[in-house]
Image 1 (cartoon, one colour):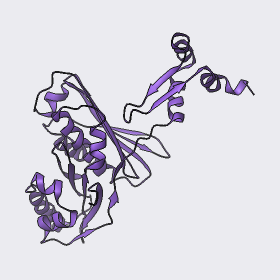
Image 2 (image 1 turned 90 degrees about the horizontal axis):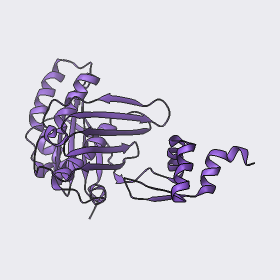
Image 3 (image 1 turned 180 degrees about the vertical axis):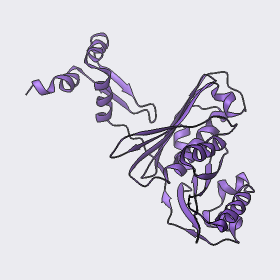
Length: 284
């Protein structure tokens, strides 16, 4: 059976309206299995992962896009990240008392949400996502309209086993026919059912929704779970902590052990490693 983990762009011919579609199964299952998430958290994490893939598909350079949320509610942390290679990872942290269902504000409480874009070359950019709506999709739509001035329709579904999303955007500079097209495709997209988005192949889904329009599909990209952690990056994190703190930990524990929160990879550093990190230039 072919993997459902795919991302695909499409455009409506002769217009300034574009779209993207994503389905996640295996990669989502791997990420969700990293912790014993309650269903509410598991579903929201799936939506966030699908959203990160769709939004990263709008970038024109190499790098990564992450969606991060933190709050005072029972869901304290939510993070999903996608690279230009369509590698995804994500995590959520929560307290014991969690509602079985609820709006985004009920889960996160007071706090903030942001989109961080990290180019492989260049400066990192972070944009604040307004949290004035009850769903993740509505908040992200609002972000594109306010921050990017791009009319956006975003639909996200997750059933706890699969996650999927559909993104439509009307780029600036369109004509009056584009206005009519935008209204039509928005209405048609709003009719999609969760099971259709979660299970149908892209061609079948787009034909069912937009069969009266001329849609051009681009080649699909495979999506996979892959963590970007490494021993080198972990050492860089220790360097950021500082020499004094690292040697203090060594005195107390003998070694410094760090676990990746995304994939649970374990890294251990002894005094020789820390000497090389902070004193390496003077040991030669």
